[in-house]
Image 1: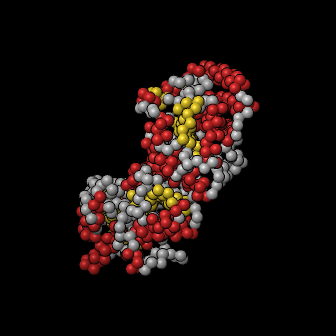
Image 2: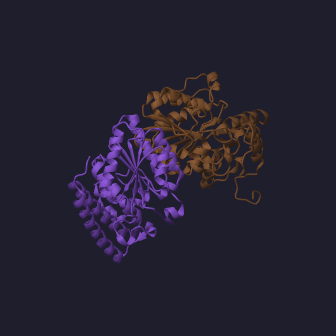
Image 3: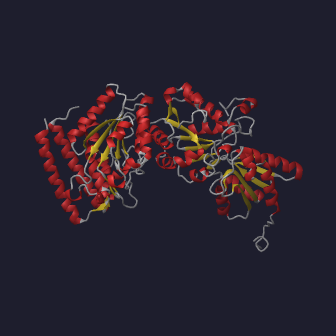
Length: 293
Length: 336
């Protein structure tokens, strides 16, 4: 599935819309996990808008591709995706995090249509994703499962239990990502607890690792194409796409700043954020125009 | 019960409770192709090896990784399968507690935890492998049905009922052989419906798991030796609790003892006490179980004796509670 320039530009437009909607949601809620939401948005956009086989009018369609957001705190970005796709009314985003809302800080998959798992407690998603992927094998279905982890989340030992299971059972119908934004609540990942050599860890656990710029649509598509090929061609190892990203990607004054794991947006910041996103969009369109084919 | 367990009494004494679970799982596997089994390196110990042999494509051993097993099962359930997860009770309720809470119960998936080696039934392994706090944890988790079968027949019934009932289950069974309480599986098992296994009007003993057989023995002895009529209730379902049976016991006998192979904090005794207190009715009450202490190492029957949850311990407790001065009056001076 090669990426045409037109498709690239369309995805840039979509991810810009979703970044704006994520900023809006944070602003409406007063605050949110905007840093990790912005870093993971390119991954989510490419999965949902280019690759995933889903039916908005049949959310529980048994043959649908699954998406497990293991870093469940990025719901402030995931909820906009699930609304934009049409699973939920966009008006719901104005209630995000508010008392009585169906949309909390971490999505409840029994309340938010389209969410395949109720995540938020870290270190759970990869196991759940391995489960949905293995279920496809048992039931003879050919859907794919996508799973996105946070890098700080990889401190949780349960991820590595899941990694061993994925490798042992050769779960190639699972495409995994780590949103490697190098930030966590208490500091830089390397300062809180060293993760490096990070890619080597996944390799040692039996994955084929692709390390890319996770805020680059083209690189994301190439890596996902590789994972599909690996599955189709009878590969025996699951693929992990380590996505080097910027926390807060798209809003220059919060980018790469761990203190923006969770933050508040008042009127002034909101206006500045909107301008920053417009600038980001221009630059990214220019890159797509130049590098796209 | 149509399609019930057909083992003879002799066969049932030749199969451990876990082996009976293993048989029930194989039967379910044959009847329903959505049944899958998972274990964390305890296929042999939890006796699900027969399922593994017959359905290798529906059997998953995730290695010694309980947290992962619960997450994988949740994913499978979300994709339409009915996973049966087997590991020791202590690991199911504590090691994987967050996954049990969030992945299984918060998501409210159709997955069944068969927690083996419960209570002090793996006696010689010591407190690392005893599960005397698991009911306190599991019965407090929303959506989770919690069952403690009294013997192999009841285990069979509980496993079958779990498949037939959507939602997460925690079924807590013993290691090794259980004393056989029932003559067969055909006694009308129903989730949330306690079974009166010994009639009586003087005092009620509410028990679960291996303590039910002990309570019946105690009741038989007390009836013959002392003419006491002891009602014994098998409270196999800890949640949803049969409140009606408890309230009836309060009204009929006004003296209740609970017995469980578990801490007296948070388990069956606490669950019954909540109902008694909320009823507003006066009732002499005593909880038997591990009294806020870890159990010693030893054979299961020896530990049960040490904790006072065997027939002798129950007999003593009945005598004690029968002596309690308890009147239907408003004068509390002689009762405080």
